[in-house]
Image (cartoon, rainbow, N blue to C red; front, side, top):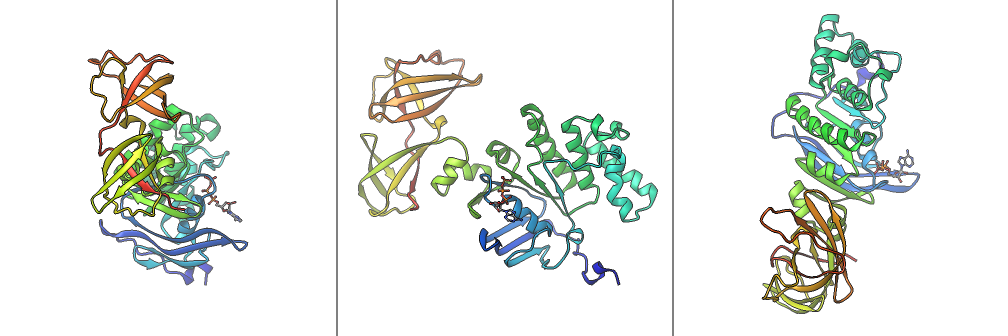
Length: 379
Ligand code: ATP
């Protein structure tokens, strides 16, 4: 009896709303060192999930546990409702695309993609059909006879993706697949991956440490740090409603203000921020004992010329320190009277002449009350 015959293959009929993967209390240790700690995660069928986190936080290890190349130290992994402990990688209906394309250099694009199907003794005609179908999907059907060295980096990565999807996996794992591509190609490939995922109707799990890539590709984003999950949410939720300071800082740029509590009740926070008093909503039911911070994204701050406004209530006087022109926006580094430096992004608006700020210029800074996020220190 061949070794694999001991395992039954994963059932592959999957409903639209089923969780294709469920991680329950997953921990992983390498040499007694905790790498992943008590991970609970549900991945929905046909969703595009991105895992975002700093280098070394355990993203690749998590993918390797899902694909079956590592085994958890504790916890359970369910795929399509079945416990896959002990199920080897090739029976999990999961394929992985790596950052290094790992193509066979002596084979042309067609043979690279056909390799797995030939190993499974799929009939010749079916192989031809399936390979050309996926080459077409990745827009390389005219490059079938090219060897990897005759293809650009982006084209090689597309072949690697075609090779992974030709096996009709239930889940495609993508481990930083775009990180060696240049900025422009990366942007194009991000959109192509999204399109491909919709076309194939399968689950994609993409690992990245690029927050823009995570937000622009995902249906949901998982933010990891030090081996645990900090937050899972839609791109908008993790950006606009970060659960803690780490998520806020990791996903985009943010101004963080020390916030002195003057008075707290169930509904309101009476606070002092950079020398000004405000009444904010106490939506998270903070108490007097907590150290609070107020967070504002640079694009939430409005900047006005010194003589442009008459009513300065809720406005801070500031001095422009740096002006960074970015085409559709201008980023300003401003210094408040208290010495605190903040970042403000202004969008170009044809009707607003006041966008050519100069270093040294005095301005007023303002944010619409309610746009701030107040968080407590987790220490
Ligand atoms: P990156 O973004 O840099 O690829 P990552 O978030 O994917 O990082 P992992 O590759 O999962 O992180 O590694 C997490 C931690 O586990 C690291 O400290 C790494 O050194 C350690 N690690 C990974 N694989 C092993 C292994 N086989 N043996 C020992 N330690 C390992």
